[in-house]
Length: 405
Image (tube, rainbow, N blue to C red; front, top):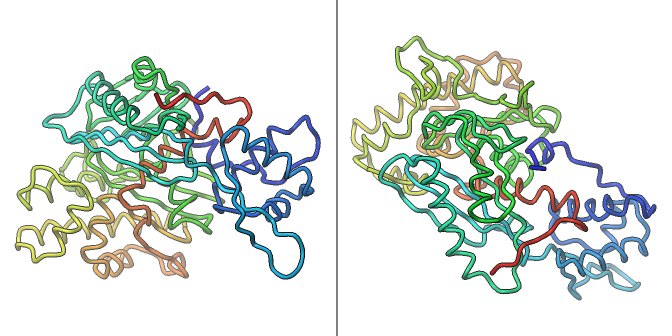
C-alpha cells in the first residue's frame, strides 16, 4: 500500500500502551517523537508516551536491534540519580527523494531524521517524457546507491510531482507543465529500481515538510504557497490537518483567478495567479536559460535592469492580491511562501506586505504572519522523503529495508 500525505498529516497519538498486542504502535510512537523533537532521553520518551521506564527500555532495545535508532552516553541528568541515555534516529536508514521538473530532475538522499545527506540535480534541455524522466531518475539513484556506505539501508523512494496525483496508486493524473496525463509514474519507477515508490503533489509535500520541520511548526492554521518551474500550487492546513478535498486534489491555489487579463496558466485557465506569476518570464528578463531558486535569489541581490524590475513588481502585486484572497477565505495564523514565490518575497517583502492588505479585510489580518518558508532548496526533498518513510514509521517492526548495494 502506498502511503499518502494524509497519513503524514493525521498524526497518530504519541501516547503508548503497555499491552503487547499494540507493540507496533508503541514502536511507531517512539519513532514519531524522535522525528518531531530530535534526540531525546529515555526518561523524556517515557514522559511523552506515558509508558513506564521498563517498557521504554524494551522498545528502545528493539528499535536499536532493527537499526532504526542509536544510543549515546550523553545524559540529560539534572541533579542526583542515574543518568538517562540519549536516543537518536539512525543516519544509516535513508530514502531517495525525487522531484522531476521541466528543466531538471533532482534526486536527494535523506535520512530518517530529515537530514538531506546528498542532492544531485541534472539539468535538461527539453521537457522530459515520462519514460525519460524514469530513466534519468533511475540512473541517478543507481549512481548514488553505489557510493552509499555498505551498512546503509533504503526504505524507498518519495516523489514530489508538479501536478495532480492519485496517491492511492501513484498515477499522475495531470501535470500540465510536463505534458503528462494519466502516467503510472510510481509503478514505472518501481519496475526499474526495485524499490517501493510513493508519490504526491509537490506543494502538498512542501506544506507537510514546513509543518513538521520548518516555519509551520507550532501553527495549526496555515496557507502554504509554492512556486516552481511547473507552476504554482499550495496547501491549506486547518486544525493541524492538510485540506485534501473529496478526491484529494484540494490546494490548487495557483489556479484561483485574480485578474481579467487574457493570459493562460499551464492548465489553460485565464487570469489566474499561475498565469500572471511565471518563473520563466523572470528568467527571460534576466537572460538566463536555467537557474534554481538559490541562484535566482543571489542574482537579484545585484542591481537589476528596468525590464527585470518591471517583471518583479508586476508579479509581486499579483501575488499580493492572491495572498489577500486566501487570507479572507481561510483566516490563517500564517501564510508561508516558498520556492519561486519566496524569491519574489525576498526581493521586496515590504511591497508584498503593503499591497496584500489592499485586498484583505481588517479582521483576518489580526496577528497574521506572512513569511518565507524555512526549508529553502531542501523543501521538496524533505517532503518527498517523509512520504517514503511513512510506512516504516507506521510499521517499524515489519517494514523491509533494502541494502545499499
